[in-house]
Each structure stands twice: as C-alpha cells, then as structure tokens.
Image (cartoon, rainbow, N blue to C red; front, top):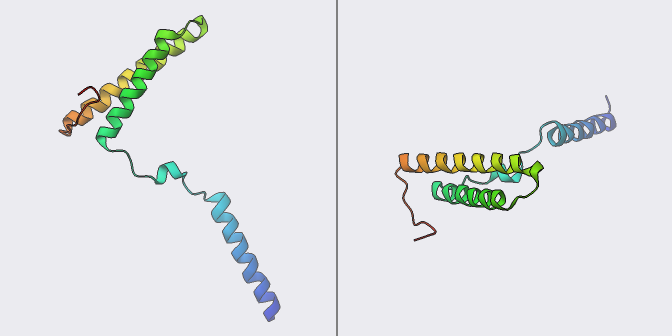
Length: 99
C-alpha cells in the first residue's frame, strides 16, 4: 500500500471513529453532568413542586383537567413526603422558608 492510500485510510478511520462517538455513543445531557442537588435543595425543590401542584389543583376548572390536577398533587405530595423522610433519616437540618 502506498503512502497516499495509508493517509486516506487513516483519515477515514478517524472520521468514522468520530462519527461513531457522536452518533452511536452520545454524551449524557449537560443536566446529567451537573452534581446532584444537596438534600436541603431537594427538599426545597419538592416543596415548591408541591405548592405549585396545589395551586394548580385549586384553580383548575375544566372537568377534563381535574383528574390531571389530582394526579399531579398526589405525586407532588408523595415526593415531598419521601424527600422529607430521607432528609430526617440523614439528620439533615436547615432553615425553612418560613423561619
């Protein structure tokens, strides 16, 4: 094989390898690369989600959306309860938004 063919094949190998890395082996989204929130941040996030679900439930008037509002509220309540339980098990204490 001559030098020209070797360079061509090397370039093709590099291009195919780069394509495989980008298409077949995608990198995780940026959100997955970030460090997970602290327990206190998780509790606050769950609390805000629960409050938002509660506001939505209290304001929804369309009969077709009432089931959706109930589902969101129940899910948010369970998540908040779960995160609080885990925080207590970890002896995490922090200042609450109310004081």
